[in-house]
Length: 455
Image (cartoon, rainbow, N blue to C red):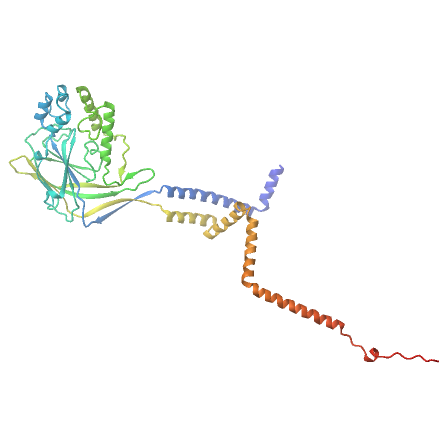
């Protein structure tokens, strides 16, 4: 009872002070929470997306990948495999395949179409020297050709864009995995930094696809969107010029398939595993590859996204029959404007906002300022941290001004001391003269004594 009675007495003795302490305690808790949020946002700032349009002087043309449909030479595959083989995905291609006599590289190389079977004319701004071309081998798409521009274009029109004249055979059946219903060309439009991959291109969201039939003339208009991402602590991105996350994902899938089967196929580039050398292993590899190819889920690979990327949107301007005696196709791909949609990610919290938030919290809730904080820190340091050197500091603090005073004013002080001593000495002499000076009657001083009578 004594403790609680004393506590109650202390509370009711000065309730105003208690209220001030309670308010100060609550404000301190709020300030601590707000400071934690400020430091967290400074450590991992939130990201905001900004969208705007930019009118460029030059504009970047996309890369265009052309894949033939049907992709393989049926007569060559059938002749080499010893069985009916319109496409390597069929089991009849591998039942009687001479593994010890014909290599798989030769089988796929001879079974696909070369450049002379595909292109009659091609160019950018009417000149083939403005383009770089490379080919790549794929299991389902066969041999594909990718055209990349060497330099950005300064003008926009049909005449300065892509112009492709392609030649086909009169095959009308479709044997590839993509069911088009007719012979023609698979046209993929993507960023020139990206390498074409038949697996990841389907679900990447950064590739435009158009199928063009034989004996068809088509005009494709382009619009471009530029995306700029920033690297955060939770999500990394790559700014390397030659990096391709699609190629990284495809290589990851190939590596996983090769490790499971202990063999690889000719379309699995840069895989050091030995090629499959029997029917069972080849059919099992194709079956596993088909499962991955047809799976809509993303494969678990540690491939980071690019920090900068471009997405192209296509619009079919014109599509009509191309009246030629040969089975040919004419394709135009071009811009009609230099206006580009820019989408950028930016950190929405920086050091300036951090200082403003911290200053606002401390000033509003606790009434602190920079000068007040400096004073508090000085007192804390003097009392707590430098307590042992407090006396030394005081001595130095008192001794240094005294020495400086003697150094600059020593002569003056000495003269003043001498004058004071002289004045004291003079006053002392005057005092002594005044005390010894007495008035004496001369008659008394020189009075002769009287002679006594003899009588």
